[in-house]
Image (cartoon, rainbow, N blue to C red; front, side, top):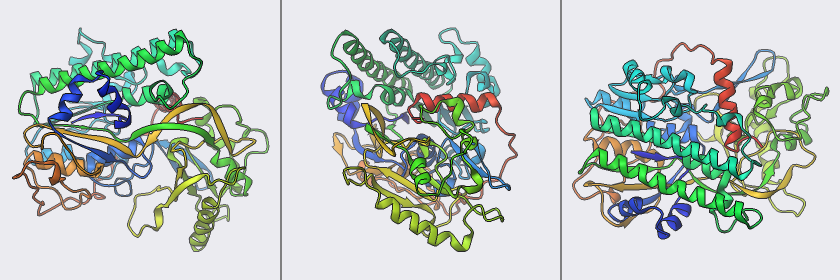
Length: 521
């Protein structure tokens, strides 16, 4: 399985028609394609975790990069999510229990590395901490000794994290785009080496370059978006980001060829992409209605773009004693209702239903200065009639332009962007090629929860009963069917692990990464 973070047919299809993706185009013609629908909030952590566990965020507990912790004094602290916060078993562990070995490269949420039979190298890890994200330990030593690439390129903290990308000169854009090429190629090199030297029954990798390119350069790729003043710089950036996809296509070719003929190949994305044209200041909206209160000493005056070193002190911007509802991170698109710690500074259980429904009614009635609704919809996550893992967002918002919210204060709650940026959409991609798949076929949209059952079926393993997806038989040749496991481990029964709090450096790197990817307007 090759995961292309943020890949969307709305972009890949025209690039294919223009001849920039020859290998991927051939795979599509020889296999089956479909849109792959993401989680309710189409975001990297919950989406890849759902895809690799076969259960939804309510069952595995990963909703975002960070999660709020409610303190006894009524305050809120943001913690980093990692593997120890995932309450569900992964498809790679299930494969191990079925006697199959697995390779897992560059997925979110595999730090610290699990002791799988095969190979693990976690994504979203600073290069200085890569050792802790790699198993077996000898694999780290082999990667560090590599002469054909620098192992530090596998980490997300490789120099560009220190730059503010938006607004850079064209020559700096070129350097940053090249870093994404270098990093995706380094991960490709690792996968090709493992496929050739120690192949496993199941191999999976994520190339996250597409997501990074599209967040920052969507307007140069989408012909319907204005990219800036016509001229040499605009044309150069457009050419560079187009060339990125040609190199991505070659990375895919190398891995598929290294896997050998007769291998079933899945290409997936955690979500799709599209333009965002406005900024919605959700915490300011909550403040205007008295649900959130900024600090009166000026700490809450965040009208400039939120910087990474500001988000880590986000709790200092808010007067938590008087706040009862808030959005913790831009990427969450979520509102949390603060529970009452016992002093009346939150919402008590007996008031919860009334308060949540009142907030829902006001959000759905929210209009801009022209009288147009700001939200396309919302989900009341804790009223869906199922058990869930805390901390679970109380409300997940769907903005009308598909974008992420802003959490800082503002003199207006909705503002237009000068130029469109890229943001997530629910419609990702699915491509299945190989002996198990129908040729030149397009089927109705699949759900990313279907990928884990599909992979187990292709491995000849039974599908645990607690997995929420299905095996898409319509994509497969006759004769390939799923079998249900007689005994399934509960998705919520994984033993808890003792976990030290992340270091200040780990937290800072993740916050810088979130800023770079456009989550922190």
